[in-house]
Image (cartoon, rainbow, N blue to C red; front, side, top):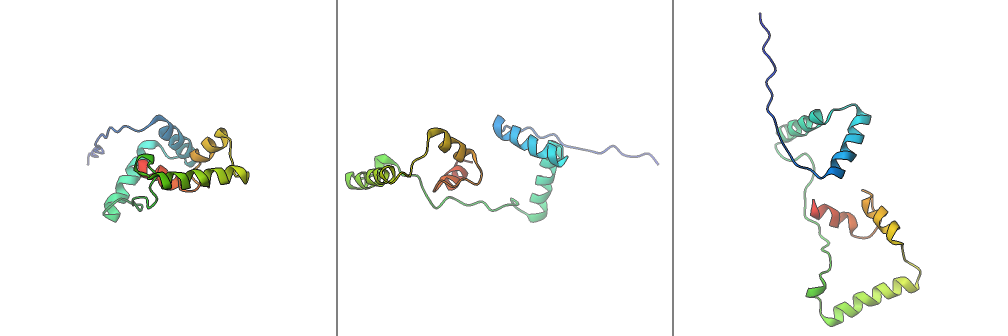
Length: 117
């Protein structure tokens, strides 16, 4: 009895290069080709009848300076000055490194990062 060739469908997608690079590094360690990982994701969508992880909007919205009153702006500036005076400061390199960390400890950063995804 002749064996049927496995039928597949082709999917083309765009993703930012850094996300792709990081995913490839992790998948390589797991021994899973990218195409298999995408297939696993799609199978989970079918099995769970939806996206296989929780998706929700961030409850913390970044402060938009244009929507602030002078009083609100002054309060926010005072918070910043208080932090500087108390020594609660980070270098730009520390902030960038922390923001790239998925377990970021900077207040509100993970929520903000997820809202851009």
